[in-house]
Image (cartoon, rainbow, N blue to C red):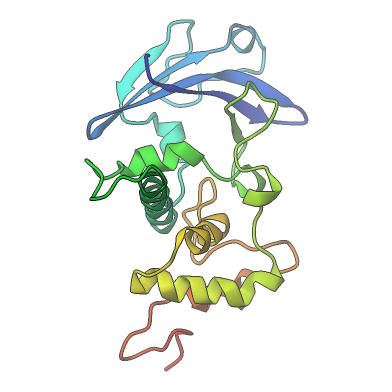
Length: 218
């Protein structure tokens, strides 16, 4: 698939096993995907098909949209919203650096934005891992993409309030992405470093309303 992004898909057991290769290509308002199992995986006695729409054979499968097992790995609605906004801000920054004015020709597709990051290996819930370089490094594993810690609590609260107000910049949005856009992220609130309980800053995610303040209290 030309102009596509390729990922290797791995299964984490006692060791990391290569399962297959995923190609993803944005096409206008659609997303095209292709997946093929690795030959060694097909010969592994403990191997199995990843999902019902991925037949367990040597022939690549192509479809519009994502395969079921990959859809289940995506961040939840909040995480996808964060990733889409981050993608928009990155494109705005790139246009500004190039001296171009005006609005971009199109808005990033939601799934395109999510797949640009396929976050976050360090905080994923599940056994599937994704790599853009053949398994040398997994997505979202760098220190810059690490989950925020307790010392980031105040910044997270401020960034959340600014995000709901529509004024969060790229750095603030990226901080929220690190906390709330993990793989298989369909969960309440967000994530935090091991020593920081999610409930300590979960209420930061609530927008201010007439009934509740930024902290969610009456």
